[in-house]
Image 1 (cartoon, rainbow, N blue to C red):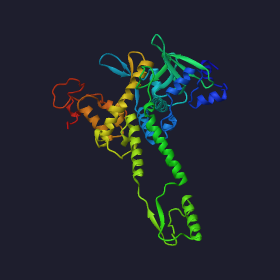
Image 2 (cartoon, rainbow, N blue to C red):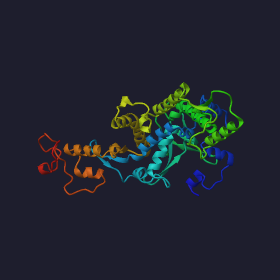
Image 3 (cartoon, rainbow, N blue to C red):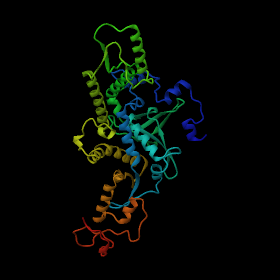
Image 4 (cartoon, rainbow, N blue to C red):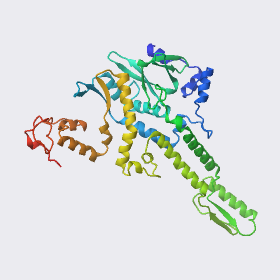
Length: 423
């Protein structure tokens, strides 16, 4: 079977109750200490709702935040760089870690899937773990580990080890150098804190409200109007016919959406929204806003346009820039430092290509290219490489900046015909 076959228990039957609980992300409690910790850090809110990561995703605001952040991490190119000297850097595409993060992290996942899953685990569970499979030149695979199965602990010598529970219930202890561990906010220094820990009451309230609405709609208890008769009571025949018609409306029959015939002087009195209805709507808006606040996402970026993001501007560009600076940058730095420290050695380091964030805005993208060319920051071939285009002849020149004299930093500055006009 091999070492990793034995390690992961491939082909072994799992004991049914224990294995099924672990397989669904549950926790096996076998000691009084584990029971005390489970009660102390339980995920039951004051509303009585069980707030698990999976149930939290049923809230549209939470799903939207996780989708947006994890998608931004998964779609921006991640490069491995090599530091030549204090001023020179080059792409290290020949490094084995570059193959992991850009082509194939393991045997069954693509880089987009791996990065998005790891980031979702960080957002929902606070931590992202991956086992490093050693190779000749470095790690050859990154095997993701479910955070609910991993229990990190700090040793007396300040090192960290990770106890992982397999599907059959047995446990394996990994050392710090064997694990890629990504996490953001931390209170103890070696484990991450998930927003669900502190957003439990907000999400629990939202779950309770959705459950109440579903039950109300299913039972048809929400009425939009009433029928009033000025004098006397309905005859038995009229009452039976009216009841039969109303049942067809409630059950979604063919009569739904047509007119309702009122007999014996009945009048229809529509009911407008009550104060309780308005308070309910405002509470739904507040819960969405609070979930976005926990994840650092402008509500309008997940489709909630009920409020205004005036603190980040009113235009899409201002909101996008604010989200990148105050939201995504934290996650980019976490990934860069995690890969650099856990997977690479000096002089190699990881770097996201943040310029790719504007690739969908062709005007902004080409505007930055023109500026880089005019000021001699980039050559035409470097711009073409960013656009996935082949180099051209004599495209490695650097144009001198406008309104300056001299030929510093230019290979062919004497060729003034190639200099684009300054704007």
